Image (cartoon, rainbow, N blue to C red):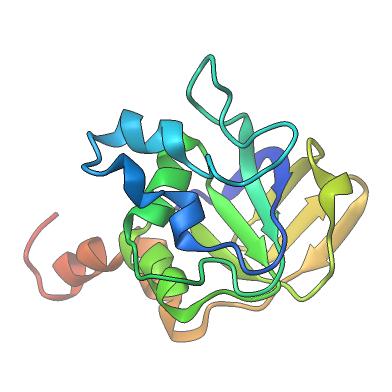
Length: 171
């Protein structure tokens, strides 16, 4: 896991469904580039999460409301966001399965922070300092809770690398 993450902020509201993050109508998914190009394609935002020309996102940090990732257990949802360029999601709460998919895959860092950010944050530079458990938005610094027993999995880069390390299966 990257220790210092910097980039521009994107905003999603409450109850953003995994079907909005990686819509089923695009199945079968044709690799990372295809998933990246459809990330949040059904989420109405200006600017959109993915730039239509580059088919990548200029946003590294997603701020969201409640129950981000609700809906199905679609594991392509965190993959699509990460392949598009997101590294962190800071939300008031996550759907349980989406949260665990983020942790287990090691692609997105899910941070729970119960503060009502809004669409005015879009484009703002954000710095997330993982070891310090802080993130900075402009000149404001916010502290978030540690990940408890999930810390080792996150630090390893996901469940598979963690298991390889702890089961002595090699890297």
